[in-house]
Image (cartoon, rainbow, N blue to C red; front, side):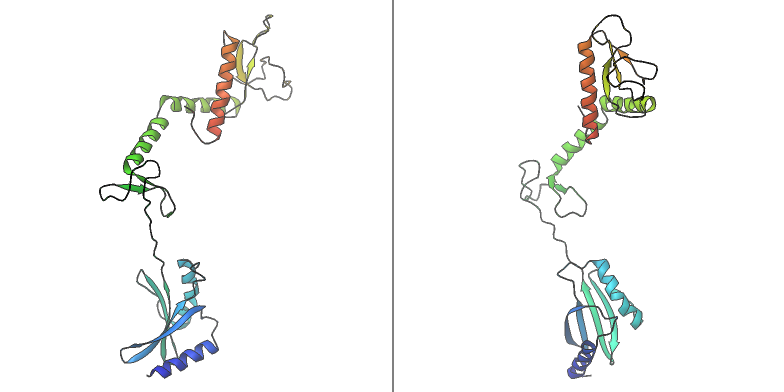
Length: 243
């Protein structure tokens, strides 16, 4: 087989391209021992083609040729024969370059020294922040202390109680009256009653009102506790934990 034979087979293939032939960026002819072969690089659409997309485009070649798809971990190649000339179309897996920044994302530590250990926050994400191991350990210790603190445990128990009593883990709260004794200041606080027959502006506790109803000796303290509960619920709703 001569180079001209390979070139003629390539011309015949490209002049009347079959439906199973994927888009090719460019073709090359090369000698392989005593024969010539023709190779084409799969068109990657400006490096936008994914590995899965390459498999999809090379699949029809495999179906019509009956030859197995070659994949050595770096190069994916589909082989076929045209006018007795060996052809293949290949896709080269892109190499991910992991750039290490000069400094830790959370402290001034330089990351270039061989004895400085660091981690990337985000699996498979090249743009994820990179931090030194001491910062990673401090962040982990803070998270463990926060999420295992008595406050967090107590808050979770209260959420479960309120969900059972009121149907909501974070109900709205109000200052309220458990008795009418002439005092102009409320002597308790409780969840806002959602009963349709309870006037929204009426602070009195009736049988329709949900528990818990907490009586306090000071209306000032009651007002503070209501605001504290609302603030705690707001922080929790935003996805954080209040201190």
